[in-house]
Length: 89
Image (cartoon, rainbow, N blue to C red; front, side, top):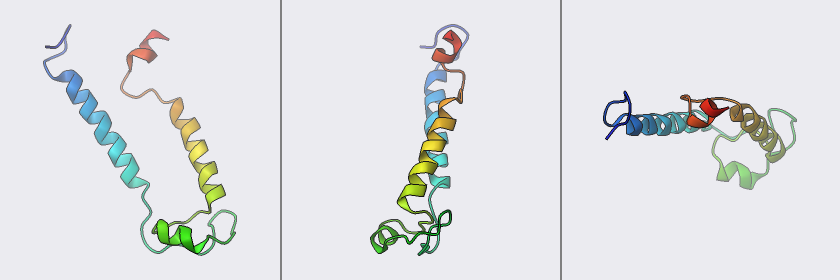
């Protein structure tokens, strides 16, 4: 049962769309091709174990960690789909 002006199933549609967006974003970040022996950013050697564990790896652990922290900081400020929390601020 939908409340207000929303049609039945609207909430589930929004949840499904959010999940699909997250899956698409995760897939777009997957590496393809051969792993590099040296980091693209700092040119330090990427260990063989990392290259075998993550096909297509392009960054060393330190550079990858920095990239993920930057992405996390940037995505925390994005208001996706007008959540209730953003409406209350």
